[in-house]
Image (cartoon, rainbow, N blue to C red; front, side):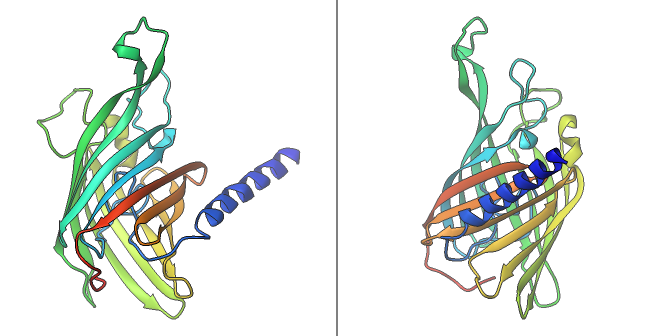
Length: 263
């Protein structure tokens, strides 16, 4: 009974964490993936940002989001992902990311000093061949860690995956509801738990358009979160992966052009 009360209290604390984070934010934005690209939380979507922009950001990756092959002395660990992404055109999005990796200092296994002394770097790309219309969804083809030769059994391309995604939004009296569906393929066998059909729902309440709630299935579990923009230039996201593991991220946005109409 005591353990049950502790679990209920922990759930309440996590919910409060999400609510407090978004109490003071404003302006509207599409959801952001942990790679810095437009998307949901851990799942791609066919949404594109409404502004041609640059983003510089960082995202906390809990152990759950780290590939199983990234370990230090046999143990998985949490890390951070740093990125810069750009939307030079309304149908193209590109990004460069690096994930900090834990090693002995100077990569010397005899060194007693350990820390995040290495990086896994990769490029991401998204193309939108079909823009959302009244009777059809938007469609995006994309991938992460897309540049490089065939990976084979190499110990790189930890985050390499490719996907086809579709998104459709419906305006209701109480807000905007978005449906998102994708098929994703990770090239490394240790990431296969995230393969296959994935997707989610988004909701933007009419009483407070800047706030957006997200629920998704990433192939291995259900994730929940929300995102928003503070003063138009600071983008924030918070989530609970598998409804248990907290993850947060933030980015600075630099607009290349003025605001345009929503897609």
